[in-house]
Every structure is written in C-alpha cells, then in structure tokens.
Image (cartoon, rainbow, N blue to C red; front, side, top):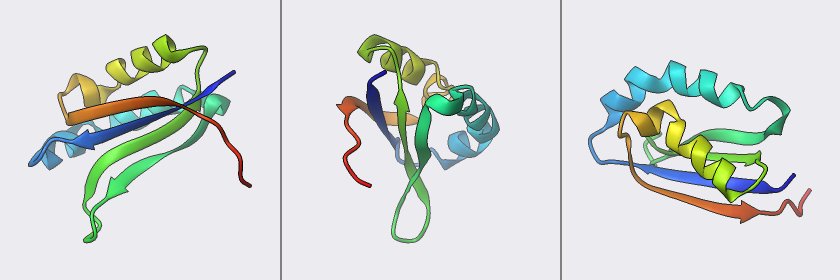
Length: 92
C-alpha cells in the first residue's frame, strides 16, 4: 500500500480549536492502526503546536484526501493549509 504524507498548518490564533479537538483527533488517527507510520504536531521554536504531520498507508490519494478532510481538526476548521503528497520511506 502506498504511503502519503499529510502536512497541515494551523490557522493563526487557533490554539483553542486545536486544544478542544485534540482527543477526537488522536482517536481518529489511532483508527489507522498499523497503517500509521508516524504522526505528531509541528512545533514553533517555543514549543507551541503549529500544525500536524501524519505519514500513513492509504489505498490511493483519494483515500488520503478523505482521511484528511474527515479529521476532527479539519472539520473544526483548524487548518489554514493542508498538503498531501505521496511519500517513500528510504532511511533507515
């Protein structure tokens, strides 16, 4: 199954949206099970969460797009920008 990276940047000033939807987002992401390679927040220099990165196996780009669109963060309008790209693991 191909891997896709979902890279999402938070809208400015949306930290309350992130906090309010974090538990639902984590539960949603865990539903990927073994298909989830990595996932976690992007951080500013001060440690503030500024976005999200997920790399997971999906059947195709459409499935990755559907997953991203149905993420509780996306449904709560947290993200300013979402980019999805095919990804290939090389190292290690």
